[in-house]
Length: 219
Image (cartoon, rainbow, N blue to C red):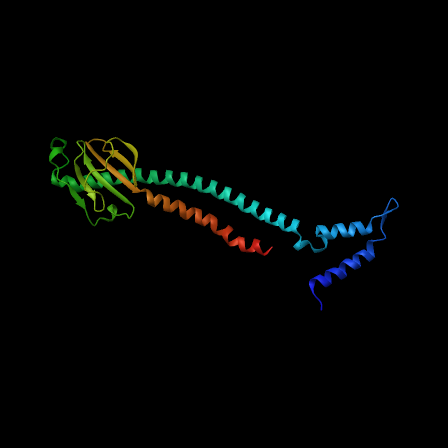
């Protein structure tokens, strides 16, 4: 019955018949060459151990290089996204400061001489105050909480009343001081939101290679 071994034996016999008479400098090298090439798998290259090893090494190298590129891209994307999100926090603090002043001024709380007596208020319903991942607090120079978004903590965030960024567990916070009045605003974004955005970027980078892996496996 015909089977791979029988076919291979027949093909090898045919190769011996064709090449056994070959000589180099009067020395018959045909049989040795045919047997050597057979042992190296040249006559069945796709099942040869050395060919499989080269193929696996090539696939691993391609995946390794891609992973390095993806990691570098993810790191760069993280840095750029963090910079963009920080810029957004700065812009948001400036915009919300004026809105917050407009909200609290009718209650007579814009007078710095009465900073210790300003009542806390909670902003509700204004689309400008609503964001799934960002909260804000308006505080006096003494640290009294004056106004906050509806999801913000009821106590002032534990950051210094000084313009700039601060990192606290779970939050990236930017503090801004009004140019003329002793009022500060803390605008905070969930760090989990930033991490999620970076992970989404990495996933988009990974998807093409993950889709290509089955095709590489077919080789």
